[in-house]
Structure formats: structure tokens, C-alpha cells
Amino acid sequence: MTSGIDIVLQAQIPSGKNQVRTLYAVEKDGRKVPRKIPDARFVFWRELAGHEILEQRALWPAQFKKRLAQPVRLLISYHPLDNRVRDLPGMLDALFHLMVWTNILADDRWIRGVHWDYLNRTDGPCVKMRLEVCEESA
Image (tube, rainbow, N blue to C red; front, side, top):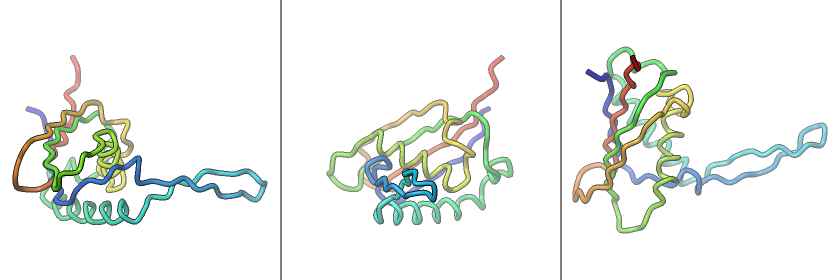
């Protein structure tokens, strides 16, 4: 049996890659260094989703309460909360960022597989997600 956790997010996912600006800071030695700055809408969603995850985390098995650094896969059931066309890679980017920002994963490089269902659900949360630890290959 594959071990995993279920995560439910109520709010609409913003695009992770389209909600970040790059500003350049000048270092003391004169080099320009890029700094990624998320916009207010993305920060608001991240804070809200992070709070939802914190509440759910209390119910997770012990192995998932610490930051994972092993291969995992995500199974995502998505329900748009409005009729806007969304950028799927951007929403995945936002969810990957959230997994790292909330310390579920040490790095999003550990996500080795994604299954995305874009369902025509008419009610319920925006995202129902299952994170599963990948079985060791024999």
C-alpha cells in the first residue's frame, strides 16, 4: 500500500509563474542580482492555502509532519471556481511552490509524477490533492 496524505484547498489557484516579478538589486560590488517578488494576489493565496495546510497537517501521520526529501507523486482533482481559462503549468508551479513553502517538501525536485483531473465538479473545494510517497523500485 502506498502511504500518502490528502490536502484540500478552498481558494482558486493563481498562476505561480505569472504572478512573480523579477526585480534587480545592486550588490555592493556593483553586480545586479535578480530577486523574485510575488504579487499581492499570489501572496494572499499562499498565506490562505498555507493556513489550510497547517490545520490539516495536525491530522497527518508522523512521517508527513516533517519535510520530505524523497520521491513523491501528486494526484490532483481541480475544480475551477469561475469560468476563466487557467494556465495549467502556472497552477502546477503555484502548487509546487506551496509544497516547498509550507515545508511539506524539501525541494520540488522530489515531485516525480503528477496526475491532474480537470473535472466538471459543480461544488466543493478548488483542489483535492493526494501526495503519495513513491514506492522503492525493486
